[in-house]
Length: 138
Image (cartoon, rainbow, N blue to C red; front, side):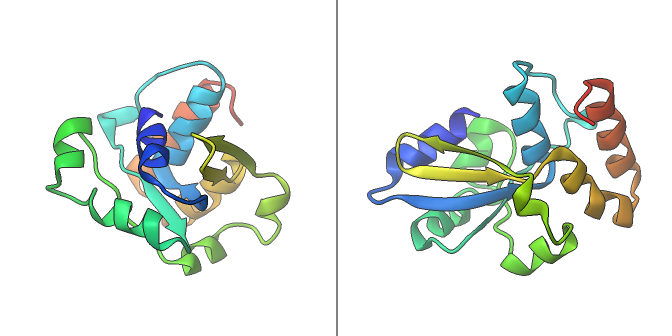
């Protein structure tokens, strides 16, 4: 999750974001000391934030950006309403970590991240669930 340290280094003030989607699943993989790629390398990052500075970093990391060329994936800034697809009490199970002393990243628990994926039920979503199950994350 080097990109989170990169973003923290670019912030002047403290900020917070919630990470959902495939990047959040990979955050949990890293949390257990692994670096396994997602099936089909279907990586992108979906942050939710109220911080203008973090939103600007996300906009600079869209499809076709220098960020995507460097990392091989892009960022999709998401509206806060996407969090309504998570269970109502997801925050009680969420993890958080602060990068560079400035960027607090909140990550819902794996089981909560899978709820919207199960509703969408695409092949990629089923593969993501099997992937995290195989690592013992659910």
